[in-house]
Length: 164
Image (cartoon, rainbow, N blue to C red; front, top):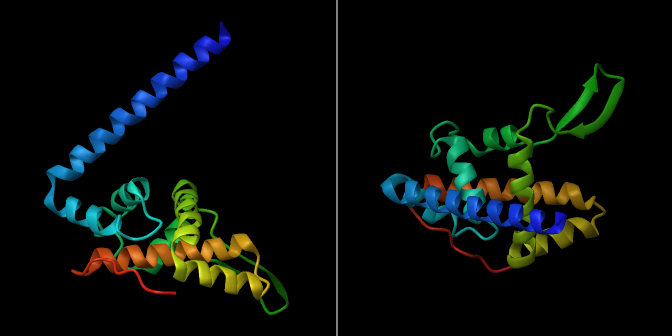
């Protein structure tokens, strides 16, 4: 009986998600600027509908943040050195006020980009071979995704896949 209830609950959640996704697509298709931004952003390898919509919402269609580096800081992708004077030095860390859900979403997009984009895959392998920690490299790849998203969104040209 409990399993049947859980399955029914799971199906209702799935239908809710589908309904919300279709509503978001309708809203994007109604506005020409949103539609153009969404179309350009989703052409970037590793960026799907969830990341594109989340970036458009967070940046208010790239009006709130005019610089990709500022948005990277907002997402928690830019690490800062920890220093207290000249003697105490710690590990570089991201800011504690970061948008954790946005960072998690961009990290998942980075994992997808590592698998499907030969240029990013080569970058990832090179950094791992240098001895960098895999999460540090994924963070750097997510930052590259943000830079690509902003480059494509703020220019008139679509994303062009480059050879490795």
